Image (cartoon, rainbow, N blue to C red; front, side, top):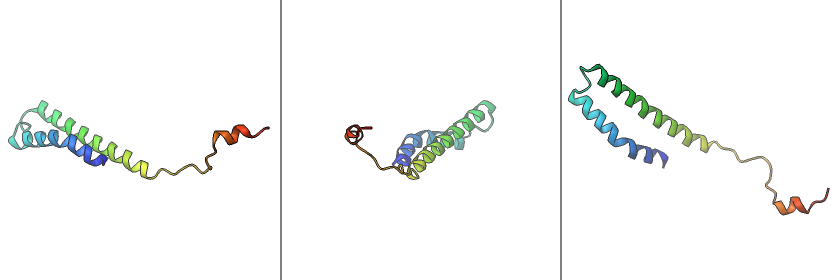
Length: 78
């Protein structure tokens, strides 16, 4: 689900950057090239971080101890 949401948000900027790249805006101007590569790096980092967060939750192990209710703990007298 997270990949779908990330794709929805990033699809328009990626298509605009691709259109500008194909149309030749970024070819001869050094400042536009640097902005283009910065945007590409930002997109890659966003997708990479989103995917790593998503996959890290799948490997989460529940705690080894058995949950105990608070009333059980409070009813015991030391």
